[in-house]
Length: 481
Ligand SMILES: Nc1ncnc2c1ncn2[C@@H]1O[C@H](COP(=O)(O)OP(=O)(O)OP(=O)(O)O)[C@@H](O)[C@H]1O
Ligand SMILES: [Mg+2]
Image 1 (tube, protein in one colour):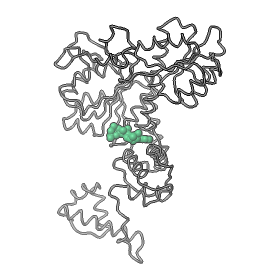
Image 2 (tube, helix red, strand yellow):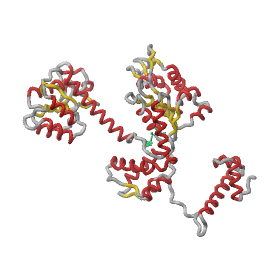
Image 3 (cartoon, rainbow, N blue to C red):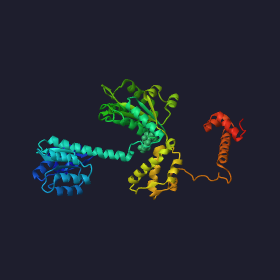
Image 4 (tube, rainbow, N blue to C red):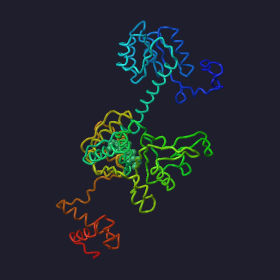
């Protein structure tokens, strides 16, 4: 049995049957390493034994010097540090350890009555302290568990920030200022919010901001992608199930409404919610209660629902694809996320931030956009909005030589951009004349495409019929009349 191999000696006889992966010391299948720093051998041994029983790997150091050496050489996850050491002051070990390994959880151990030392230790960044002699095993284990949990949380936060970006809504254009104000007001209320907008406009970011700005900010933020739930799992996904409720339900599971209790449930891609799911969600929104699949107990949920879609949900209602009653339940407050082309003045700020992040992520030296590069970026239409911008900037950060980035680097990275046309320019022709020529060409082409039907042509060009007539008259076009 694997449990009895190299690490078998850590376990007393009889625990071999317990999978060690289930012990607290194991995290994602790997044993956490605790460095015990104490000059008393018997304390080293006692602590090591107590921790080993829980599955932790332990290392010991008898002096400050040895502690720092082991910290530098070994993958230590947490330190138990006696502040009274023979060679150096424990507090200076703490300080040096945290300078080289910021975020490392250090639990300080000190004798009775050294309150001042403990206070200093906390000031330096210690995570917790244990009073010596350490009589209570539970207190020791809790300190270690919490220290590691905190470290994981920090690592996860860093990871999230790295993957999802800073999660901060950038931009100070009037459009963004209005959005922020709307978010601020909506966040303060308990009303359900429907966030609308094209792909990549930051709808999820808005949903997060609504959660973070609400009194539920310390509660959970749970996301459900409505377009991606397999039909047979809809109920279980929303409401959870009891063990054995259906084939494959080997353990009870909480659904999203239960998980989001006290917090926010973010229904993403709500416009793609299948009809069966619409009916079930509607019921919870109306009644605030539900049952787990195969469950007898009726559960109540206090989850605030925020939904997002890139579809025109009212058009979906008219087309009979989205329930009207559900629409009005969800869309108490409407928050539209503006497309990037409506706030081009935010581009310099967004570009600078994304470029700095992309350079760091890809191990490139810092670069910056020249004025021409920014103008080229501002001229682009950004159908994929901020997500497209992030990708383009990332591409530039990887491919370009830098440090200064010009229009050429931008053009090379933009999808399908062509060099500006020069064939329209004519010696002696002014701007207005050229624009008129272009307009005439466009209107004639559109009329031809619609067999000279003015109503169809106007619709295709997105113009009022009367406006198109006026334009045709001004341009001297007689067709279609
Ligand atoms: N105002 C903003 N400031 C900074 N980053 C932003 C902003 N808006 C969007 N982003 C970034 O753009 C990307 C897309 O944002 P998000 O996922 O929120 O968009 P979405 O509207 O949900 O897109 P989709 O419709 O494709 O699901 C993310 O990386 C996000 O961090
Ligand atoms: Mg999204």
